[in-house]
Length: 609
Image (cartoon, rainbow, N blue to C red; front, side, top):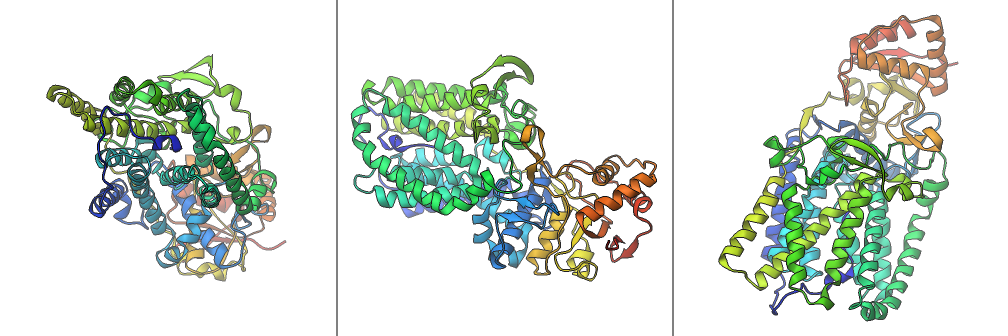
């Protein structure tokens, strides 16, 4: 995600000296109110009914993060492993360290989760992410990067509600946490204080551990971007002496950071790279999940421009609109860079050069291994092709590297606002700049996320009646089996855990695990005959002829999963398509025999071997 190293603390280039006053408490409160109001505006569709509504384009990830909040709190209060679970994917379990475990969120919000349930806690965290992102960047700009109040407010609100961050607010509690890079940058800034490398390293080490739990991929991007920025800044002829003087304390601080972070993350890192149910790389195609070059000049769907019909379909899905800055903003950014460059002495251009180089590097890397423009794939190779097979790089999606560019543009805009205020242009030029900022930024103002009513958790689960049919920690499976396309099983499990009903396990689940091509990961377990058959019925509504071989395979699969009961709810949530429950009932009856009607579900008891 975003980034910004110590060099940005140098004063904005200006022809004259102005006195910047520290923002008073009233300004801070006003910015906080604006950030909170904006966050509530974006998530307002969910606040209408936190337990009954879901994000339209990504209800599967919403169910996953609700489950992670529920399981994390349950694990920590019951002495279980928060980084590995055997409640999913029976009999193999799931390595949560290679997924996004959000353990810090689960622990911090556990009391709230037990009080109001996982869906409401998910919404609180999502809203806090957006508000915290805007305020954190305002605070960094105004307190530590030397920006004036108007510049800090504009920069903070732009970065906090940038198109990529709003797109990932479609249920991604990890990528919507734009506050994480801001506090990491603050931690890096502390390392350059003379003689303060030890406390600075201790603090940054803790922040790195927190960031790994919340958004490990974002932590990697932030570290990489800081490296590019600092390397560019330090090699500038006018800054080499300053860089050499700061380097010893800076390196000592980084060493302390590494020791502290490793001590806190040793076990999760072992699980991540060497633990059971791990994998290398990811199950997503880097060619598909590369940013379209034209996407940088396009508008996002959930914006005023998108509402006016000016959006596009250049992203693989609405959640991955990682750039989508709009052509006017790109033009404005170039104009701001040109203005700052012309009015800055040659010896003070290091920060501008580093901003431009870092933005360009990440934009090019986000294009992936081959050029893609206006949806057309080409065979023209790009630099990412040389990096995509390296460790860590192979677990990241190249298109998300574009998320680094928006914060860099926000920093550039803040610099330009400070310069324009310090040396006011002519009335005509001032009007032109105001119009330019308005034309570039107003179309990007976000609109609420699309939401939809979600099927309720059945009374069979909410009443605790399931405990009469499943032994403690026994296996229950819904139909269809739980996957990203049909996430109800994890929603039911989350309800049982947060309402202290006890534990039941499920086969399958929505997670990343082994089994993909060439040792890479995949979503969910490798399908078996029965779950593949039932998922096809759920999606198409077609009723295939069930043979004795199908029945034998079903018995074998249920034994493999150690299933005690199979449950079909009256209403089943489909994340990408409506679930054909009547067809599922007919086919499951052919496979397993007549069911029982228990409360509001159909139930098949599976006799033990």
